[in-house]
Length: 207
Image (cartoon, rainbow, N blue to C red):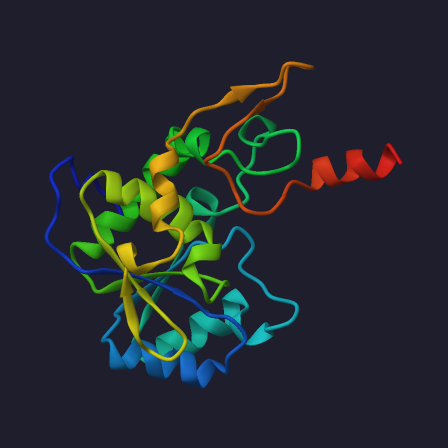
């Protein structure tokens, strides 16, 4: 997936899916039913201690055996990016800053370039898109560019973005707020959970 899709809204169907804890066979069956041709893995770390069937090597092998391509975009579009400046003091990822990085923009163009040629589903681990950066970050940025994403649920049903429960919160916008007590910066457009290991270590050491 390389190239530049430009600023015009392309005409293609782009999906997202979370592998959750389901057996790999049922995951593959859903992809087959929806005729997905390529899985774009947007996990920062493409491994799962609790669901090893979705570790990158095993998953890529099984997808290939079922005629489905695999591309890793976790470095570009992952939910735990590198760079302390992309996290607030509590360890939440500030999505507005991530969306402006060259790395994220490059990954987005690779995703769109592939989606223009294949039937693509970007994949993370969370079953519910409302809880995942593939919706809260990637889909939101695409929505702003007039590009829709359909979200595949575990049972094979498909939801449009405006049917996801956190869709309405997008109206909050990306307004960073400086603390009155220190020089820290926070934003309402951020990850739901604290994911920065650095912030977790700092909190532990201060106790």
